[in-house]
Length: 137
Image (cartoon, rainbow, N blue to C red; front, top):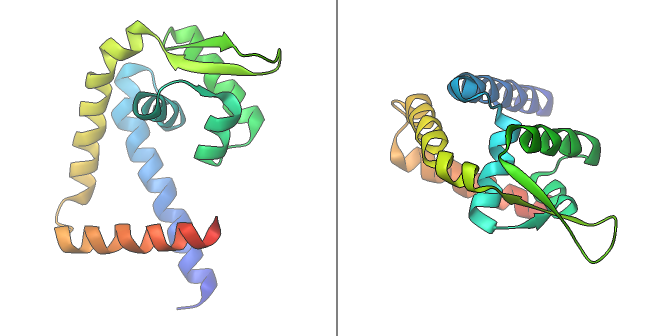
């Protein structure tokens, strides 16, 4: 397999997984990019927009748009930091209340996608991704 084929396949897989997740989240008016932000805030608590961007490897402009959408939906709020430019992003009470529904939809989507993918193969893939990601950072 050439490097091109490997990366092309990874890109195709990533797009397909994103599309599947978008379908699962559609009934809630959410997209995968929004879910990523909500999930990270749920796990890590309040973060600055810069920290979110860096953690999720997302450029500032698309992160700003995603956060603005989530603010409009009432799922996150922005809290001014010490510096005028710094804003902390955190989940609203509404998001905390709705989160289990979103998480359930994502879990069902993930389980359907994994289907007949053996647990040992899942663990191997996770290990490979972790090693590769560490090398990139």
